[in-house]
Length: 82
Image (cartoon, rainbow, N blue to C red):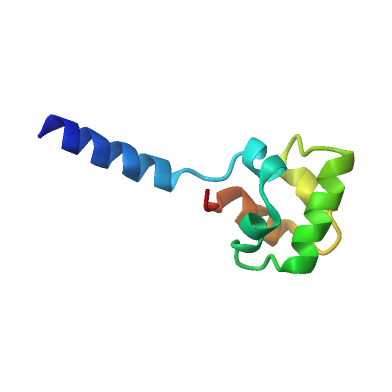
């Protein structure tokens, strides 16, 4: 019973975490597009930008064409599908 409770708690915790910079720098186009407000064009722009310079902060995401503060914050709090 303890193992089931521990597994349930761990699963809930993992599903609640926000996106990390590592995930942002490695997310596939499809994973980026799973975030509301990110379509094919913006996903392509994120990937193009991070190939030159990986993101060190979520604030840097605002430098990507078409991404403002609200969308950058949405990315920061998004949960991407693995």
